[in-house]
Image (cartoon, rainbow, N blue to C red):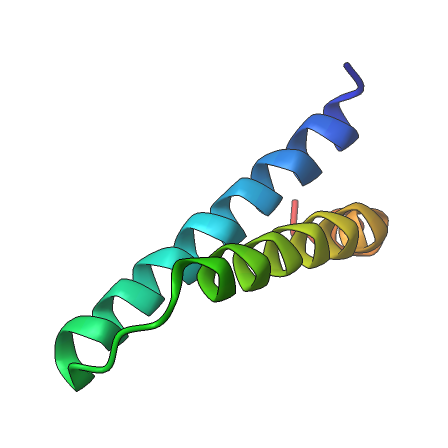
Length: 67
């Protein structure tokens, strides 16, 4: 697998899991449950968005690293 693709997929997983952790924290603090289908749908959308954003932005970000 291409390293760029692998990295972007991993960022998608990180985005998905981060959203789910934040949702769990919201439920614990606010006491308002969020339905599982809503959590799953938004988590998939966040994951896909993070994957595509990291794939598209990788060339721009890679060039901005300091030596």
